[in-house]
Each structure stands twice: as C-alpha cells, then as structure tokens.
Length: 127
Image 1 (cartoon, helix red, strand yellow):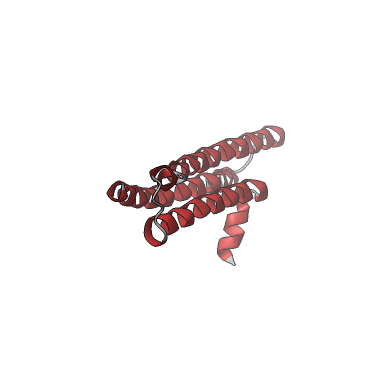
Image 2 (cartoon, rainbow, N blue to C red):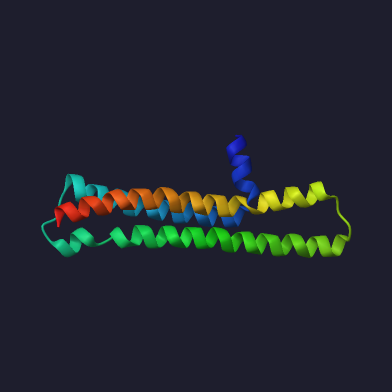
C-alpha cells in the first residue's frame, strides 16, 4: 500500500503516463523474447523489428520523467510565489515529491536498457 501511495504522489496523470510507457516497453520485450528464444523467424528483418523500439521508448520514459518533474517544479514554485514565505521543510518535501517522476522514468530506462543489451547480444548471435 505504501508503494502505491508514493507512486501516486508523483501526480496521477504523470505516473499513469509513465506506467503506460512501461507497459509498451514490456510488450516489445515479451515479443522479442518470443522471437529470439521460442519462435525464431527465418527473415532477418522480422528478427530485428521491435528491438530498437525498446531502447527508444525507454529513452522517452526518461525524458518524460524529467519533463514531468519540471512541470511539477513550475507548479510548486508558482504556489510558493503566491503564498509568500514558507517553511524550508515544506519546500524540501515539495522538491522530494517532484523527483518521483524522474526516479520512475530513470528506473524504466535503466531496467529496459539492461534487458535491451541482453536481447541485442542474442540478436547478434542469431544474425
């Protein structure tokens, strides 16, 4: 339950967008695992299809996480400007929450890149 609460603290729409990106990447990964290990196509073009998309979509997840953090920081700074003086603990808490989307985007990128690396090695051997 704690993880879901922290997940949604990053902003419902922002985090759901990153989750959809992660699901798309998982689709590409599952498709490539089936192609490389279970049902190896004889056509080399079909063998390569979907492999670059894993890394490209993962890079987009990293970019989206950073972009969403910037949007969150802008909204927070706008609120601080309207409120005037605020305690530093509140400012630190807001900065901490704003990093959730970047951390999730970086997590998606890191894990997907590692999986892409191993799938790319398998592709090189099958080529």
